[in-house]
Length: 254
Image 1 (spheres, rainbow, N blue to C red):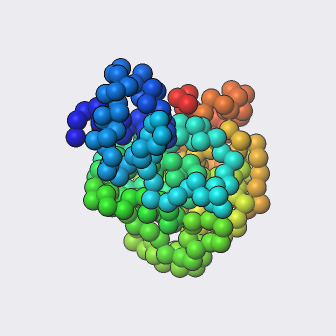
Image 2: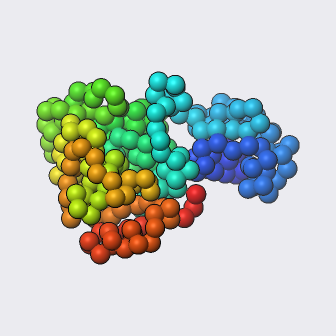
């Protein structure tokens, strides 16, 4: 694969979709050269040619009308995912929860090799199909209605003898008073179990989740090491979490 074709794959993972003109500007080359590159990439598993540009190829069709219910700003989610991916190194054993932000992180990780991913989200496991450089372990459990996550009593036994370094956790709510909360009690229980098998838990939270409390508490704020978000979160809000003892990492690339 030529260097510029590899660059196209990398920037599409960063931004989700790009026009030919945007690619031309980013790569400092002509639109006609970009078109030739896209023809060469026609059968690449990571990118889809679309009218006037290119988009990220995924195993699951997240644009399906019945499935596409997220209110998360995808540009913000991708920025958080890019920042989180920078923490992961060759040889790491990591864990991903379900949700939009962890799915975006999974897309970023498809370009890596030599890592092991443990997850209770069936869609995230599917995104690593046919990538021999990444080992994937899907937990046990029953599929939770309304999400891709496996939950329930079979989850914990499936993790016997399994130890992860970093657990990247999405959230529905994040507050100093109540910590990390979710809309689903079974998913909150599953997250606690995954935390018990991990050295550290890193919360991925877009700006809409701060100072918000959902139905089921996952754990108090003191249980978490780091929060990754964007500069859409005000400095005063960030300071509240830092004063509570949590590292806050900010991505401004969105």
